[in-house]
Image 1: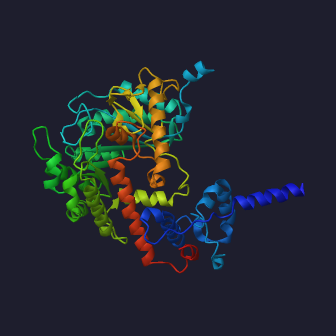
Image 2 (image 1 turned 120 degrees about the vertical axis):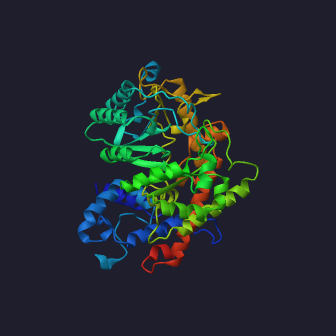
Image 3 (image 1 turned 30 degrees about the vertical axis):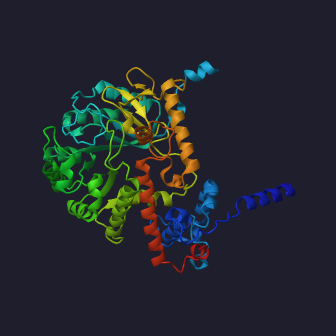
Length: 95
Length: 402
């Protein structure tokens, strides 16, 4: 049973590992930099106050975020590190 | 097994309907030279029995999503009396199940708007869109009466009635070649007019309109002019206090903000069942609303049936439906395989593919080069510049990946 648990843990870790996004050359057209532009847009959104409080980064919101992540985890990783409606996990002072 | 599949309706339509386009009449009191609608001088009107059949089929089959926009269009909707709409709205409300919210919209040329229509619009909470192409010299070149007279003054008078009644409205502005040289003049005109949202349509080659001033041998030049136009519009949109929203800019930003960005495979115009268009006589179709009433040389009539006698959704075995659906799907897959703008436009509009390429399974059109690719380039470049200007120190992830 423990072996199964370990296997599941390894698979989940591997599946969730953030994909490598190569940086586009500086002279690329905007559409070639869409991933970077989107990253910055979402980052700006995240740092702005969220009307619904979802991105507040409060500890009390964690169960809600986890439930949201559980429903939608492939999209979250596909958009890593830009997770809409996700608290700024990197900013520990918010916790 | 095969026989049973042929006799079964396409249940994938259930719960997907977002946009119900109803044609109360094909008649239009104007004769704009770029109009894509056929039969604009036909004054016949949708009967309430036909509308009842639409409501029964749509709601009993469970086609509606949680929120359905009902757009009264495909002719000039205000040429039909208000009393007819009052009965029509009541009829739809009677059939609408409790969990579904209906929102009524009219897209009008604005000529017939007056205080009585404004009362009706306010009473029934109708969302209004008015078609205006900009200042009078530009508008009156294309949007004329059957006698060839300009309509700008009448439209501005109609919009004034809306403003006096405090009714918010959006505008649709069709861009032709001559518009592209005047972005500031057009922007200033609309800033003074006061719409909540400005939507730019391009003069499209589709349905009954077989030519466009934006299509031609000097394609690169036209695209350059269009990009310059949109760049100037975006420059004029002050982030702190824009005079109105611009639909094209909003669309790109909304798509980028979508958590499912990069995973979607189609849009409302190329996924069957998300839009249903019904003509005055009950003929219905899906995909782009502009396909309503069109007969194609190769595919035949693009209507999928008539709500009075045929099932809605259509039968899986219906030859007409299968051919359209499969061809649209092939076109979508080709777009996805070949176009780097796919995640933003999700496969384009079947009506434009058919109008320009003669097929649904084609890929790039003038419509998508201008309204999708050029607009995306302009908006992405603007976002890129904004990001450079305010590169946030609290954004370590974004900074570290550049």
